[in-house]
Amino acid sequence: MAAARLRPALLLLGLALSAPALAAPKDKKPAAPDPIAAMLEARNAVFGPIDTAFKEGRKAEVADLLVELVAKPEHAAYHAEAWSRLGAVLESLDLPFSALLAYERALSTDAPLVADAAGKAIKLADKVGDTAVLEAVFAKNLGLEVSAETRSRMAYLAAREATHRGQHPLALASLKMVATTDPFYPEAKALEGVSLSVSGRHNDALGPLQVAMGAGQAYKRGARFDDMVKMNLARAYYAAGNFPRAIEYYAQISRSSRSWPQAQFERAWAHFRLNDPNGSLSLLFNHQTTFLDELYAPEADLLRMYSYFQLCKFPEATKSIDALKGKYKPRVTLLRETAALGPQELFARHAALIEGKPAEISPLVSYFFVEEDRLRDSLAAVRSAEDEIKRLKNVAANPFSAWATEAVSARRANLIDAEGKRIQTRVTRMADELQSMLDAADLSRLDMMDMEKRLYMQAANTGEMAKSREVVQRSKATKKNERLWPYEGELWADELGYYRIQAKPDCPAGFQP
Image 1: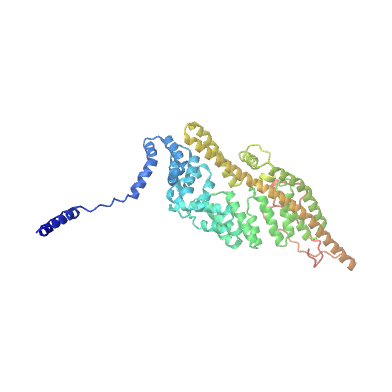
Image 2: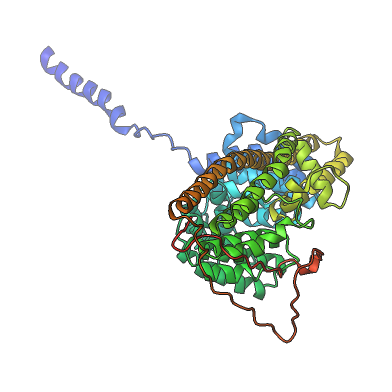
């Protein structure tokens, strides 16, 4: 009986033990955190005070807070946005150069995140005259999602960067993206032609250069641009071996252009290549006059010597060598001393000339630089930077002013250093080149002595001096509005380019130097 009574009790115990387990609810898993909400919360924690200050119109404080933010490495994820916002607020404070540099930092940090900064940066760069600061960053980010207008301008600036680095295939690829409606389309086509010619594709360069000339006239670029394109067309034709067409374009360079003396010299080479030494001597006569004597043109003197050599006029050729050495030996020293002035001083002296101030710098160096677009653009940017540095003193109490002043000052220093070094490098190269030419002239003297020796040996063997070969003498047709008269020793500046030399060759028949 005891056993029988225990069984129901055990059953009841089992029910009692199992009942709570069956009745208890299942445990719930904790909800996963929302990553987007977490990111927004973290961003608000960083930008909250900045947004509040902006809404309340406290722009200077916004700039202060943004400068403080970009200095914190732990907030690197927000730096691109912060730089872009800093650019916007500095622009609203009428500090365009500082704003440009902030936008450039934003694009360098994370261009895809702040793609809209590209167009804003271009407008500011045009305003302050420093588009060069954007060339490198645009060269790395041509795939940005921007408007067609912005992409076109980015492509042109990227092509300029590639050209400076000697990466001509990359420059050509970038230039294909420049739209015909772009305000710098004429310059883009001119750059395309130069890049093709430098790459050895001289015939391919002719088309873009012709387009550049037409576009320049349509966009009213003026005589300087037109002459620059014509010079490059002439050089492309010359390099392609089409010397008559090269002569045609060299002859079109405006007499008032600073490129005219160089065009006359290069045209003289084309005549020389066509076996027309008299044509060369006629054009090179300009460089012997007092009007062009101060220019750097040693190769013109060498070419004059070669032309006399080709005519077997050895005494005249020897005189040309002596004149070359007497004229240019002191100039090697002058060029060395000029290069030793240093980048900053070279920039300062050229800047003074451009701005119409007195400056101690030889025309030998300054002649082409003072009208060069690149140097003039850099000078305009330097002056814009200096103006903004002065205005930043009015907000010197704000922390952002210290950053802006330092950034703009650094950019100004970089521009001066880069342009000064470029001038210095060219002057050094001119001195080295000139010394090499002077050394080569002595070798040419030996060649002429050997040639004269051969002629005298020939005369000794035959018993008489060989007669000079006959050449056709052509008279120049005189137009109705022209007059011709022989040169009698008096020179006039407006007659340069019209002098003609008719020298009979002294080479015997069948004898060619």
